[in-house]
Image (cartoon, rainbow, N blue to C red):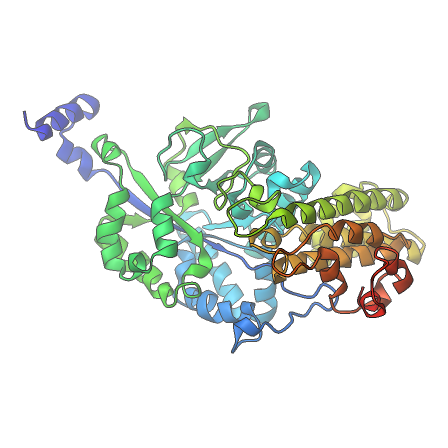
Amino acid sequence: MPCHYVCDGLCWLLNGKPRSEVTENVHQFLCIYGHFYQPPREDPFTGLIPQESGATPFDNYNEKITEECYRPNAKAGNFARISFDLGPTLAAWLEQHHHDVYQAILDGDRAHRERYGVGNALAQAYNHAILPLATTRDKRTQIRWGLDDFTHRFGHKADGMWLAETAVDQETLSILAEEGVRYTVLAPWQAAEPITPGEPYLVALPGGRSITVFFYDGPLSAGVSFEDEVTSNADKFAATYLPQHISAAKAERGEDQLVIIASDGELYGHHKQLRQYFLSYLLRDSARAHGFEVTTLAQYLQTHQPERTVTLRIPSAWSCAHGVARWDTGCECTEGDASWKHALRIALNRLVVRLDSLYAETTTTTLRDPWGARDAWLAVRNHWISSRAFWTNYGAHGRRPLRRAKVEATKQLLDAQYYCQAMFTSCGFFFEDLERIEPRNNIAFARRAISLAWQATHTDLQTEFLADLAKAHSWRTGRTGADIYRALPPVPAHLLPPDVSAAANSTATPADETAA
């Protein structure tokens, strides 16, 4: 018997309709997800981005990528048609340096809300830290800062949140749900059981909570990201590549299905030149012409609630086959000797313990809730709330301390907490060697935190940190993390005196000590 007769018979049994009528009512959806993010490049003492030679003819990569990617995609209206997150450090830089581009990106989410009743932008955990490696308290701060930043910029609460490197564990998802986040995006290999990419799933959490997760299409996302031919022609892509990722079984059952393509947003114009035009044409014309409705994750959830549950591999991430080892102990995901990663992380973790203890002890008489105050400090730094409101809510007696010295010391320690979060930016651990700009930037943030703690309390956090950093070695140059620390631009007025620095390494030269 011809197979189509069997299929028609099954469709009659399951749906009361022949296959031809069922498939006519099946909808195929396409969602493009763009993760738009740049790490903080500013010197934490001056607030200025040093000139980056690789960005020529631009002064730095933020400028270069803006002109190659953010501006053309904003001009094309792509931010109104895709799901995306705009990393807080990038958003802050765009707001200050290219406000027209920044505003156009926000307008994309606003236009989507006006048309569909939901926004298409997601929040991002603030400093792009690998949350499974963070403490519970730091996870919560990263998530709260990310949500606060989103609400301030986009004018509404975020339904979804992008996790750095899609790195996830159970506690991270639980905190997301507690903070009101409805969904996130993961790689298909982060599921511990077979799943259908594109379909929303529920992950059960302690306390009867749950959160929705979307799994993007792994092979197709990889093709878009790394194979030039795949994105050379939007019509060919929609006619040839997209249909290959439609489930025949779901189509036969008359079920709608969604194809999610996820990548770094910088792919469209920066990593791949002129691909902003591919994206624009695909979203405006090609997808619909070949039977795909363009949608976003929040829009899709309005009519397609999750019906199945899933168990996850935890911890896991989208760019490491070894859980989250790429950002911790090191693994073969990067070339060379990766042992420097674990040594650097231990140094930073030990600094956090000392800094947190100093902060909690010192602010006992000035802050009613030191950790709640830390969560609120981002809004003060960015002038979203007044200093008066902060002290009313978090001051030990509902007010600012009477002594100016105590006020300044508390503010310095809160700023130290801010830079302490920044020093865990994932980029500092992602690449192959300690002797790169990304680890150096993380070390610079640590130095800023140490400096602020010194100014506030005259407590030496530098000596032990340098001793810990000395255990992290570049496999290419042999230099240590302590060497990199000492080679940072000199700011002697804000750090420990040179003779204290010398105690950490008796072989340091006077020039090294001055730089420290």
